[in-house]
Image (cartoon, rainbow, N blue to C red; front, side):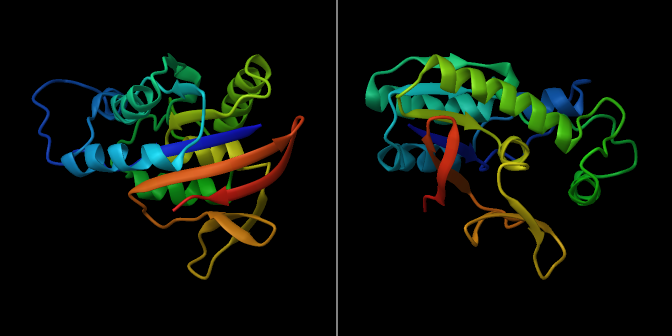
Length: 201
């Protein structure tokens, strides 16, 4: 069984909100950029799955729709696959939050989620998905922090030269702090055990 975790990080950043939407609502509703839509079209040939899941964020669904069309499959929406909740920022910023969370997996802002909470939520959700779809290849369209949360305790933890958290598998860096346009991580399972993890470029 193979699981693909996909995060399309190319969202519109030139949006001005004239409403009282919260940070979380803005993140949920933020659409892909034109470049993000083009990348979503390109990545369909890099995946070989017969079951599609997506978070309920606009960017994840917008990416999933191209693979669904390409393979003529339905998209299963699961809100447990959503991005890590930020909480109340106040005069702080998301970069500061991420830096703190990489050093303390229980750290969170008020109303937000810690990495340990994301880890628990994602592992429960993906565990159920794998059980329901045994012996099938699955693709989940989700988010970089959600993927980090899922893999947090499944891979080896370390820090790079910039003192940022990295996750490795058999000495291969799988998760780091580099901002990529698209993240595609392929995980091969033998029964319930992770047998191999690779990055698909």
